[in-house]
Every structure is written in C-alpha cells, then in structure tokens.
Length: 308
Ligand code: G3H
Ligand code: 13P
Ligand code: ZN
Image 1 (tube, rainbow, N blue to C red):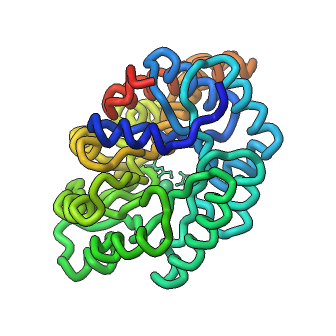
Image 2 (cartoon, protein in one colour; image 1 turned 120 degrees about the vertical axis):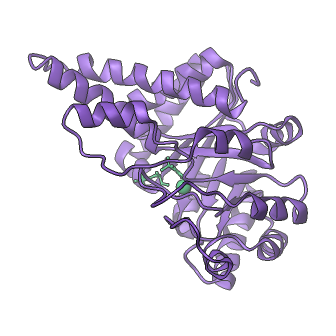
Image 3 (tube, helix red, strand yellow; image 1 turned 90 degrees about the horizontal axis):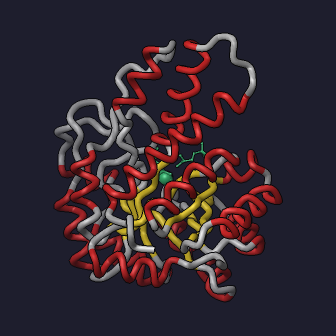
C-alpha cells in the first residue's frame, strides 16, 4: 500500500468522533512494535519522526523502515515530520517523500509564525503534502493559573481562526494544557476544554492536534522505579481526558513519552532480573512487545481501532 495523506483519514475521524494515534519512531523495534499493534487493531496511523529522530535513524534508513512497514501491513500510514522548526527541514522531508509535515513556529511571534507556516504550506501543497502547524505554547503549567496567564500561554481561539485562514495549514496543534515529556503537571492535571470548544466553534470541522498527550502510564513508571530508575513526580494526561478530547475535533494525538517508558521499563526489568543476559535480542524483543501492547491499548482509547 502507498503512503496515505491525512485528508480523508481526518474527515472520517471528525465525522465519527475518534482520533488517530501519531507515534514517534526512532529505530526498527519501535516502528515494528507500533505497526504490529496497528495491524492487530486494524487502525490507520501516523508514523512520525522528529528532526532528532530523523537524524538518529538516518534519513535513508528511515525510508526503508517505512517501506518495509508498508510492505508487511496493509494499512493507511501517514509519514509525518514532527516539529519541523525551519523551512529547510520541512522541505527536506517533503522532497524525501513524507506525506505530511509539521512546521512548528509556536515559539515565534504570531506574524513570524504565519510567515514561516505559509512558506511551508506553499511549498508542500504544490507537491501534494499536507501541513500541520502550531499556535500557543506547550508549557508545563501549575493548576489554578489565571485567565490572563492562560491567554499568554494557550492558543487564543480568535487567533487560531485568523492563523488558519491566513496560512492555509491543514491541521492545527493547540495548546490547552498538555506539554511534552513525563512531567506535565505540577498539581492536578488540567486541560482547558472550554478553550478547545471555542476553537472548534470558530473553526468548524477543522482537524485539531493534541501534542504532549502521553498518559505517563503508572505501570511503566513503577517498573522503571522498581528496577533502578528515578522518575519521581512524573505525571501525564489522565486517560479519561484523552477519551474526552477525541470526541471533539481533536483527530490526531501525539505519543512519544509512553513509548519511551514502555521500552525503558521492559529493558530495565530484564537487565536487573536476568543479569546474565547480554544478547540484545533478549531485551529488545520484549521491549518491542511492550510497545505493541501499549500502542494497542492507545488505539482502543483513541477510538481508531477497527477504522482502517
Ligand atoms: O515532541 C517531541 C517528541 O517527543 C520528539 O522528541 O525531539 O527528543 O525526538 P525528540
Ligand atoms: P508526549 O511527550 O506526551 O509523548 O508528546 C509527544 C509529542 O507531542 C510529539 O510531538
Ligand atoms: Zn509534540
């Protein structure tokens, strides 16, 4: 099956009230674990590489890994650049055969973000590639922050509308309280669903993206800590909040941290409980299985299982 673009996949997800998982890939075991899960769940999916992930896997190798995934699983797969911070990185991925790129100008002032995003959109659309952009900051936050503070950090709905209209981006990553990594909230977990609803109201039927959506699953944190890790006050987005978000226009949910934790917990356990092991297949194989099981669970939570 050739690579998919996200347009039809998002349309169906919006209509039926579910989201696709977008999983970060860095190496062969990760891609195999994710694709095995998708094949078992019959789920369409995004395989995404950050600039760092692309450099680590090496561009030529990553295309071959993705080709192998497509040859072995009959599924709609979107190959996506995650957080492209400049035009050159986005262009390189479009030229290389990615079917979707994210241009992340969220750290820039609004007008600069518009200009960069528009430049990437113009280049990508001419070549049949879709573009995700971002507005607002994905910052770790305290609970009980004021409305003014929220407006300074989170996506402002009126600006989101203007941004989409001026840039022509195909989907928008919004900041409503999530952040990257394993330490997302200092107090109670809090997502600004009211803001999300306002964005949806101003941008009806428009695909939104939730970054920083790992739940930092307790099972993996506990296992990491039991076998020598130090993941003190880690905290993710509660699963019930993800389930609520996918019923809105959020139709792409980004997961990286939960993959990292699944791998690390599995490898830590094996190296500590079986100190005689030194064959990498003996710990990378179970790590791949742990990724698969975790991703299957996510796909059911997101509602994309059975939608391929
Ligand atoms: O959003 C960031 C992803 O988790 C990728 O992280 O840049 O360390 O590969 P990375
Ligand atoms: P997590 O760190 O919550 O997995 O978020 C990943 C992400 O947003 C990748 O773009
Ligand atoms: Zn992200």
